[in-house]
Length: 434
Image: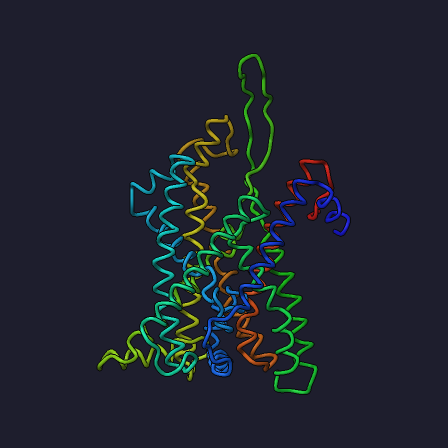
């Protein structure tokens, strides 16, 4: 692997892309440590210690939320805007047509997503400001000018991260937004390890060793599933194009078990944050709204005050991941378009008629594969942390983040390595992945 990294760095174009991406990572980490003036550090630590859900949001901002930095919201508003635009492609014929218009249509959708990100960012910044103000982080009462200043600052931080993501996608290596989240998680690894070693509440090394073994097993399992594929056999017929004769050949169509990657988890966490905003918005309202606010702020957390609330939260979280896995897979893989592409290139699946029958076969196959992928994502994100907490008896705040963090880091790392490998193969270098 070290030899492959050396070969990659010897390619001027690839070296520039890697160094450009790493440079933006450094700027991102610097911004994550610039706090909004007036935040009470002790109250912040107490709030995050008692609320694991805020820790989930902090995961995507690289620790910026726990410091209440200028990028405290991370890329969450942009992800929410992307969700809405993806949903609109299903219900709006106009947006669906724009997607088919090529580069011009893509630019229009990107522009709308950016403006929607600003609006959602202001809304989420308002919710965070209300939450932190009522928890004593910003004082018991702040004026409208201070509130507006914080909202604009946090929204600007999100826009900067969105810009970083687009720059990495265009001039760097890999998917920019995913790599921004990846950089935030990796930047928190030392603090999380230190918290487990010093704040585990036990002097016995057995739980820590058991946790290390579980982490290795889960990481290996994630790598296997992330690279698992269902290979559909494809037979190409002999065809004549001009004066050239193309002989028939056999190949395969790879369908990934986890076609959606880590996007469903990011989508689900973003949606789960809305009840928190609503709960804090209704905190000072008359009854029955204040009672609803109290219920949301008390029970809508990963580790609620009783077993029913904990089960309800994790069940909703699991179902959102499950549903978004199917939704995003349907967006990224269209069996009708794939069947038409095979038909145009004189290719077919042995035993399946070209056209409609091929599309139906691919749809059935992808549905079954996606079911396994959705179970995998939900289990790693929700069930594995609960199991690890039960076995090791370590603090649940850290372990609840473990499955999500490992899955995102491994998924993004594998996708980025594959892109680097593609660049290496083009220049006849040996890649990362055997």
